[in-house]
Amino acid sequence: MTLPIDDADFSNRLSLIKRRFTTAVVRAGAPVARHGNGEYALWQRRFWEHTIRDERDFERHVDYIHFNPVKHGLVARVRNWPHSSFHQYVRRGVLPEDWAGDFAADRGEFGEP
Image (tube, rainbow, N blue to C red):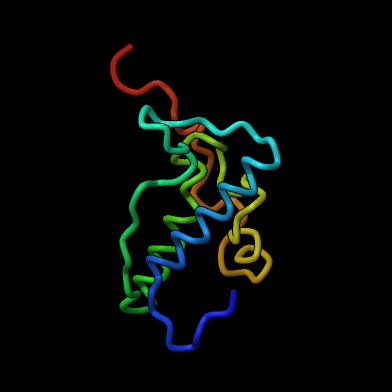
């Protein structure tokens, strides 16, 4: 599919990407859960568009993306998620390999015994 250079219909593009990816995953035989209404439970239902305002805003969004696998309990450390651009940031010296620490170690017992 070729899109015109001036095409700004991001909503439609994202919808097509999600639909085609889901179709390919299902055809490949991967188990995909469904919601009660029958929709595949593979994607977040909605998204919002955000224009990056400046360098700091960009950094905050990249940090959010890098930390997401930890937030959702997929790994204890950002560096343990193999599919992340975090590894490129480490190779370029932008972030240290231990960025954001070890979530499993930090979840110790707090408060009164």
